[in-house]
Image (cartoon, rainbow, N blue to C red; front, side):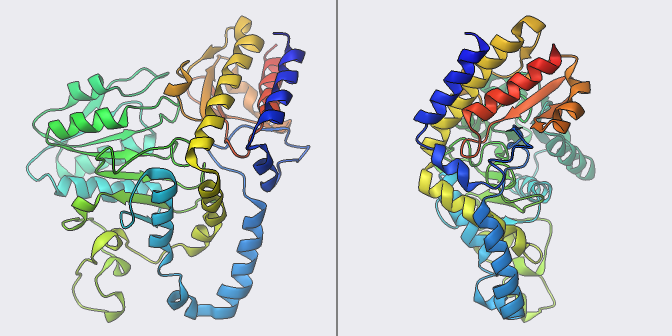
Length: 407
């Protein structure tokens, strides 16, 4: 298909897209200085309503109610938003999710909790191509606790498989830490099958859903997942540094031992007691004072996702990534660009990675022109396609700009 025909196709797909009307709810969607924002898998665009919500919060709640706000809803916000994330995007019943801390801190907490639930076991399993934070935290905990790390090997354009994980498990495995959608390739792991294999080995699993939540539906309860964590600044559009969330299955809450004993995770925070006693339920995963401003920013996107539904979001994502793959192959295939993501749409999340040795030096010029993907070593551009804020024409415009610069 000639490139002009592909542009026509993009516009036709946008005209037929039942979710296209939601795009104009996002701030900057019509910014001519940024013709192609292809990094929603790193930082999602803000909703215009969020700017109004934040301004109103500063004036009316922070400024108007001051410290009284804690008794008027702020203290309940971590669990309330956690329940909404669970309901909307995770297939999780109420009382199992909470918003707090960063992804790194939440991951540390739940890995330590999983280890405490499997005393006497001495190994942690993780894939070698997992996100650096996941690997660094696992290695740090292992060094601190005198444990061994067993590595799952995976191709850089794929991710962990059921067979690969099963081969790394042993009777000494306490916990496996894996990402559902690989941060580089967008490969979707078989969460249900891998979780089953881990349980058959007597171990527990922690899933990192940072590149899944809000773009790929999951069923944490139905798939018998033990623990999960994820960020909220990608497809949940909570803004830079927005607080993360964590999931702990009901069956683990009664004995949950997390390592950072803060006052708001205690049974009676305002009793100011002399000894720590953990709160009941998911609140015991909380440590310090909740980052309320970051939680305020994600509420509009959660409401929008609940309105649209994850099934429709996923359908749009599948169409966008398929269109992107076809466009890259047509415009850049002859120049040696390689698709470093699964070619089966059902096997990838909402971004694709394309590899070429020239890409490492091209990013500054692309960004200067308002074409914004991101770069991942060794030579990949990631094209993040956020289903509710990215159009087909925007996707084409970005890919065409990359192709023109490559030529």
